[in-house]
Image (tube, rainbow, N blue to C red):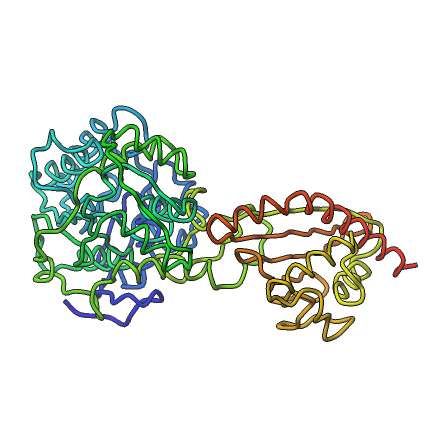
Length: 510
């Protein structure tokens, strides 16, 4: 295999040489991250979705061949596979209700038959890592994954099966379960499977293996286990995540609660993961998932620098949200820019994926023109104050100083203008678009990371619309408690702030 220059995500990629690859599950967690890598490697990519409109908002949509296909419809699948060398089977129905095992088996048979009829050279399937035991003894989730693998391996077209355990990256359902449990529960009593042995694998390494599987010189028909090379208990995953995320020490106490349905209900109760997904996921966690061989290295060498360990994979998954700037967007999802690392969040990830975010957004219109409103916004803080409940602001400032913070003591460097990195009381100017918007990053003691944003725009009547938003990324339980505690103050401060800023703009205009 010939190695090409590294991708924008710094993955070592094979040379695609225009070989056409069909990606099923293109709108899913793995598929959506893999397609840019395949394009960077030089493959011709064809992406499928049951509704082609679902592909339209993807940043790579115009660079791929888009095909609408239902994998239960043989005609659709045959059409999608015309002139395709490699089929990437990345579809999974977990969380799709009862009967998903039979539906997945039928889809696999349809894909296997269509691949043979269409002259496909290689099928690549991302399955699940599970213990070596009879099919009927596996959980529904794992039984479905293994059943699909066997159907494809028994087909006429060679199939390369990757068996992966817990995939670590923002948006991965397994990782999101770890994240939410660790961040919400300092003390975690839980089911007995918390002591089971699990071998995680970083999403970066999964993408690396899948991309290289599309460039093999000869087709392969067998299964390979992939992981990070080191297994651990699920309980230590929770405590390791907490340490990487900078949370206080987590204490995990496995209890003799083997009931799979009960533990799934527990996950659905304490995390935002839908119960329809949590239930089969918990059942699969009741089984060890550890690789027994690393023979994939004889076919695809390890990534340059070696396999990614669990802690490093977690660090990558949370780095941007923990340390990066706040995206300047007023959409509900405050992390909408294209991620620069496959472990980071994408807009297409489920709404429960990613760091917990609390927001308080206000909008108000006034008669003053935008430039007058902006002049008031740009002079906020310091001697000019915050245009609402000055006593409450002073109290919060004193509390911050008592905890070792700046409080209101710093004031402003310039009373009229804001520049990036200027301090404004306990805030720091993170970004500013003169005349339009400013983002202030908090440097106060708050149990998390906080921002305050203002945006000004004109209205049809010659007036202005002022939008203000507070954003908070809590750190652990204390951060969540802090946000809940200050919500009553927000209800007093923020509506008044918008009203008084617009009133002050009227005075400026007059």
